[in-house]
Length: 269
Ligand SMILES: [Ca+2]
Ligand SMILES: [Ca+2]
Ligand SMILES: [Ca+2]
Picture 1 (spheres, rainbow, N blue to C red):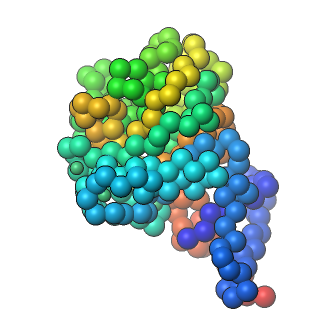
Picture 2: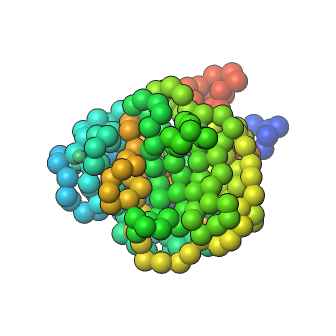
């Protein structure tokens, strides 16, 4: 598994990407977090890690150079994933807590995305939120309200209105990619790389010292996520529709061939 950053990708022209590997002279790792994840990424959690039980700090690594690592409050051991391994949550009290860091205070433009695999439908499921349990700066969730049952929802109680939700819903227990962006006063919801609704939202998200929670909406644990999460990402810009669609395409289909994201593999040099 390798995450790479390329300068540009065209809709119409194929790009060639070279990968060099197996150099025994490279030690330690040549990993370049700042080079792969642009400065607008405030957190990227691959969720491949696992520790038995719960209680250890900084288990779930942030792949960006921000080091927003998450504490293990997850007792579930299921590691089914969309990209390598993901994380099951136990439907009771499992969540990942990322301590506050100043770059997690995002005032306006934002993108939150994740792969999700629900354990069932019609239950509320928080994916990522910055909260003190009484106040929610920003949140991506699956709604269980009657007006937005099984819809992808973006929430901030600093804003008017406080929520916008998708037109489509997640009504099965397969893997799906979900995302929300806010650009200026426009919120856009995405399901599997495609726009599924837009709406207006006015007001800045507040600055505070609350932690991030992944898979839970607050200390009373009334809104834990039921199922699996993988590849949770937070950015301080509104990614474009092309960006979201490309991310979905290259993460959802890793096979090689015509009409695939990777059309062919060249020979080794
Ligand atoms: Ca993963
Ligand atoms: Ca654990
Ligand atoms: Ca638990």
